[in-house]
Length: 307
Ligand code: ADP
Image 1 (cartoon, rainbow, N blue to C red):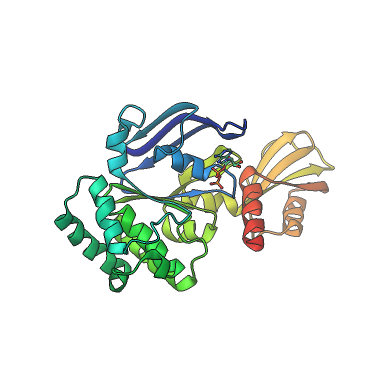
Image 2 (cartoon, rainbow, N blue to C red):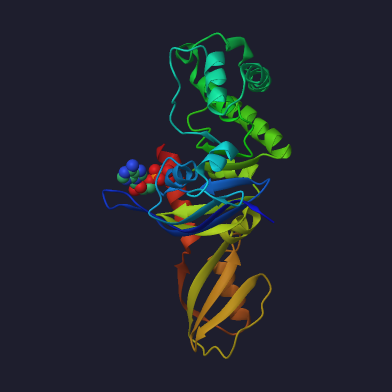
């Protein structure tokens, strides 16, 4: 099946020599509601900028609905609606006019643009404000206007860069419902976020980016399974003959007196030691082995506490 997005060996080095993307590969299926998750500075906006033709590629290829973005930028721009992180609204124009103007860039006539504005403003609850300028709108209304503006040309792919950052809980829930609604009608949605909860609630599939590397590109379920597992490296006083099959834990022999034990989070170290005792292995030493994903989740949690 043709992919909504396919990124192959993509690199981005900014002028100050910062390597923002280190040879990343990523695919998003058509019709997906996809989370692009990572802590601040991981490279999310750089990827979004590249897909939206706002940032140049250092090397690699990006395909949107099968078309190469370098070879066919106009086609790609037509397929994408972007809601950037920062407000970039014209402050002095009534918001209804902003919609008509943007529609004009896509060759949509005034009458059609008015119809579409009516639908979108109603869906997003800002129709009453159509004669106002962005200066007169609250933060949440401006955000909704930016979403409406990104959808004026009925794009196949909607890209949301941290859409709910700084948005109150009630509006966040309304926005989530709206995203689910347009996704169920066929729009592919790519959502960048550093809120784990947002990705978990909305998305079936995700990629996790960390320091310019994609460290996971899978279903949400797989991630939560991994997150709930933990591995310990254990030294035993007896010789380990071979791998042992045990209930509730995964046993892997490393050498004659070392093994790795993987358990789900709800098993305690004491329980592990007792389980091993039952098969005549006494634990001399036990250390926790943290995987990349756990480190990342720690980073994400730290950020959520500080922001
Ligand atoms: P995220 O969106 O995940 O917070 P970014 O893509 O904004 O991450 O940033 C990735 C890295 O690239 C960071 O180290 C950031 O400082 C750097 N960076 C982003 N934009 C620029 C730019 N225009 N010039 C130089 N460095 C940049």
